[in-house]
Length: 494
Image 1 (cartoon, rainbow, N blue to C red):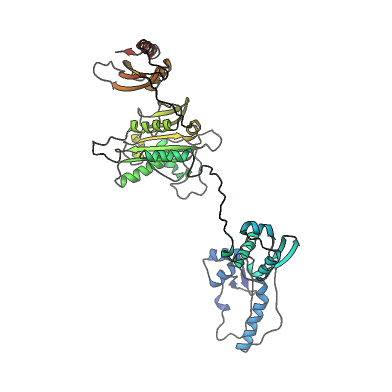
Image 2 (image 1 turned 45 degrees about the horizontal axis):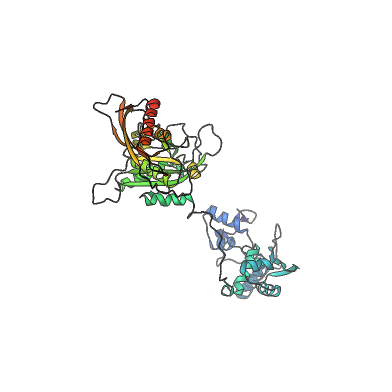
């Protein structure tokens, strides 16, 4: 900030406004004419700091012509003498701490041609720019050193600024437009790539995409997940107290979106979000940045069909969505293993396992977390790391349907209630290469079933792509499967 003073007291804030004592009135007999150039950036900072945006500050912050100052003060003195019969004192005091220099810019003729598509001759360039008081000095063929007029110091600083002046003088309508544009292949941006296809697939399955902020409330995260689970990336200057850390998970903001929709009486929801999280656990190095997919469902399927009541969107519906996605991406079969998670209710939480590695979780919202966010507990959630999923994705491979008939066998077994069904199905597939399909079609736990046991019924399809199977082959494979399940899991056939 610069102040103009008379040796005893300030009389003006430089480039912004003078004080009342420096005004001219009917009693004024002596006038001191001041003509100055103030730095535009400094002048704007001063006006902004004081909250005084005056006509003077607007002029100075846009830049004035420092070469015109002597002419301006002489003209003002002459007008005072002619109009007001004033007497002009002899001499001018010039105070300049450092010389004000005009900008010098190099201009290449080839660069002009490449940018505008117009092949100007050197004479044409000199003629056009000289008409605007630009001084051109030819360094060598095709290269000029251009001295910019003092009135254009702020807006002409680069070579491209000079090229713009040439285009303006030549006429934009005279610049040729090529009939054929060269196109480069896309690199899978916002409208391409497996992630974009994943969005389209989920939208086709009835899900709606959510885009939420990457900033979340650390206190809410600690209430839901427990203190010490995450080592947050804290913001130096957060927008608000409720957005003070980078999100370690997509689930809190997805649940906030669910709550907002439920408050608007939208009860049937299927939402998903793809985004980055910053999941750095205590003791780990690096940012821990991951690309994740999160899903949330509640209520009934939409749209409702007249043929019957709409089914509920529950854990198994969400699990089916993930299985459908994995199958569509041609990812190796995933497994669901019982697990625990602070946001998910005990007994409903499961890990999503791909190639023996845990990549995510799925389950129903825990009642404690639901209470913290003022939500009902009938919400099912899933969150998984996209990197291993997309890395394992393969191009679709055509596999013809077998031309030979299959033979189906059912088996009912009694097993411990803690036995993993996924492990059971994997064992059936491993025992015999003739197994084409295996699925659970019945589960029972109640009367006539011992405590701690469940009754499970499996349907197994035996089929070959090369020939029709004989009954003896199917029976032998079925017996091997039964024996394997008994030996490995201790099941009892019923």
